[in-house]
Image (cartoon, rainbow, N blue to C red; front, top):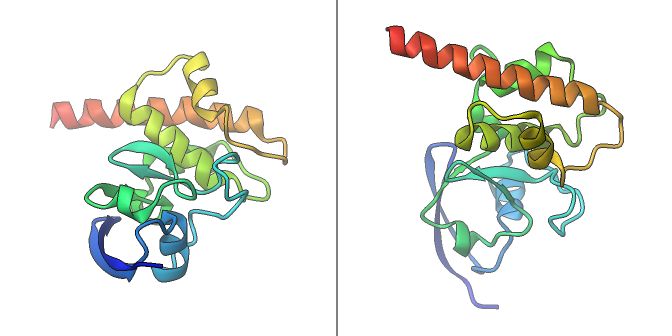
Length: 165
């Protein structure tokens, strides 16, 4: 297996690796960078647990190679916000208590963040479409939808504050 130098920008930091270009991004995020946000679920891009943002769009990190991610801005759950200053989507999920086991939560949060990056005022159908491919067995679907609506509201409010400043 041929390896090469791969440069990745993850959560605002530059990293360099010597590995096979077809290595799934998820493996590097979890194993090399020790990030726990993206989860290994199915490994086939079906469940959404490994979702991250690549250039602001939701991507299944188990299905994209490091070569394909090179030169792009990668954001994991850890890069969205902090404990003291959570991203509006993270804040909304906490407010709406939109989690039980938490395994799917990373993917759901990243999907909502990706949706709001391209559509700050999504309709209910838009939210459902963005979350359609994310599997959750705990049954918090109503809370997750409420969190997505709340996140949209929080982001619009933050933009108004920015405009007024």
